[in-house]
Amino acid sequence: MIGQNRVVLDGHDHQLIESIKTHLSDLLNSRSGCLDAYRDHGLPDLCQIYQGLPYTLNHLMQSIKHTIEKYEPRLQDITITPISDETESVITIELKATLCTGGKVSLTSFFMADCSANMC
Image (tube, rainbow, N blue to C red; front, top):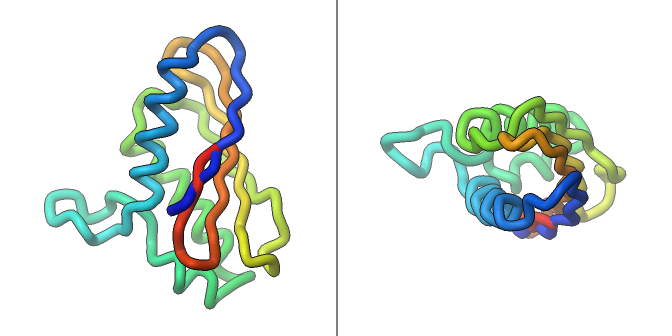
């Protein structure tokens, strides 16, 4: 995943956010089935997601939410929303969540056609 993340914060949780962004980037760039001990760690093959668009976009959104809910406990009340047209070569999502400290966060991630993701 090449995920560029745009961060909007309530409060002063910058170190926490940077740690979460790093973890999310690693998590969303992982592919499910690659770790024997954690078969559901990561996302499905993004190349297959792109080949099946627009029909696979909902599956990707559900997979992202499930993966983050399971493997990033510092985020709660997670919503994942696609914010770009899936006909483009980039799928852009917005992640909104409540931090474990009570603050709110909004992140943007770009899933590139080369099967990578960027967090912003």
